[in-house]
Amino acid sequence: MNYLELKTWNSEHSSVWREIVSRFGQSDYDNADRRAVHMATLKAEWEAKAYARSRATEYPTIASQLDDLYHNGIDGWKTTVKAIKDKYPKE
Image 1 (cartoon, rainbow, N blue to C red):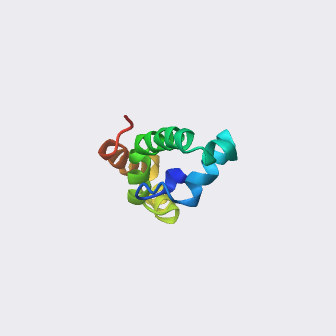
Image 2 (spheres, rainbow, N blue to C red; image 1 turned 90 degrees about the vertical axis):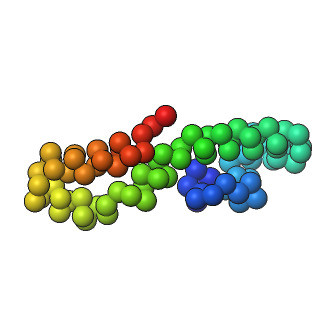
């Protein structure tokens, strides 16, 4: 799991550790001051993607979207998707 996929922020989740170590190295994670700075950065990135997590839970399944395309055409499918995008706009 990627830290951006967490439903609620959890600084103790292994994906946060993996992201810090992969970007900055184990020594930055071991240093409490640097770790705090990096966690704040990751949390800000996570908060900025709230719209994407909200959209993901609302989109119909791929099978439903394909069925929508078949029955209602591209314009019908776009209407369905646009409603969700409008409900959770990008910042």
